[in-house]
Amino acid sequence: MFAIIHILTTTGLRNEEFCNLKVEDIQYDSINDSINKQYYLNVLGKVNIRRQIPLKEKCADSIKMFRYARA
Image 1 (cartoon, rainbow, N blue to C red):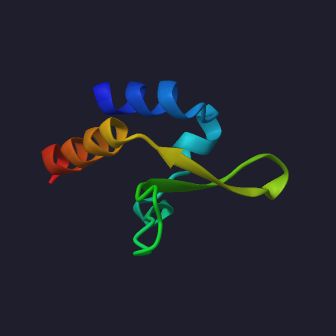
Image 2: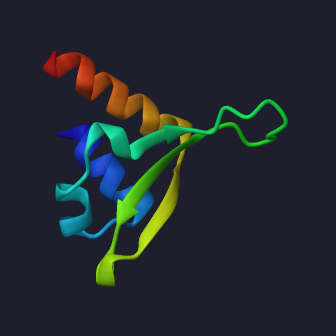
């Protein structure tokens, strides 16, 4: 439950966007030259516009713990 609330409060996702998320929508910026190596959510928002939402490290950790608990 904590992971769900954490994601919704830190990302500003709409409920519908959150409900339609898949594991494949989480991406990691692993380019060697990138200063901000972090996770992103690819979200299909209103009017079918795809956008990238950066995730804070603690939020990504919450998702990992949630997935570990569900496995």
